[in-house]
Length: 261
Image (cartoon, rainbow, N blue to C red; front, side, top):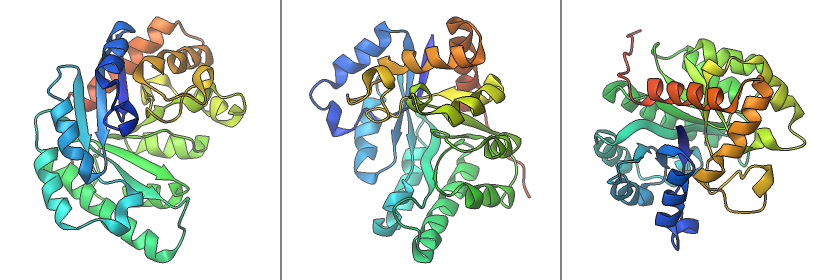
């Protein structure tokens, strides 16, 4: 029994066959999917999708939307986060890949700080997006309230950065890129990190694993990523599935106890 902890099934790329994609995922042993809704215009759509028993949600605002966000949306976001089918806040975080200006960094940090507050207030874990910003992200997490739980989505950093996140109480999200032929550095990091600190994700419709590169990704393709993870960790596929699913349940379906500063 496998959990896809990061999917975007509300994306328009699934408009023609969304139900078929979900049913195909169930037939491949994916028994829970966490739908990530990180743009305000997708929130209602994701909430409606979560009426299905196997679909759960996370609500947030992606850092690449920081400059265009209406700050009133942050208040609206609280309503969605407080919903019973919402298991996390996010994805949210920092992304300096396209804009490394000081102005952009300040705006993204302000937006992330607000979502950190919501995570604390509603006692729900964080799904962190971090691209070309690990130093700032680690410093923020070190200097804010302690006791957060969460996952660093689609982790692609160094072993040192992986260890820093784990020490701070975060899991690493493992996605299709670990199957890529040129991912030697990432594969080596995965070998060194304990699987008890990992979740398995698709990020569909993005980041299709090697066997499906160039295609739209979907939750049923998670098996290829999980198969590669079991190979890297030198454990049976079933064990990798069991451990990553346990980690997901511990993170998303157990109460979060935050400590105060």
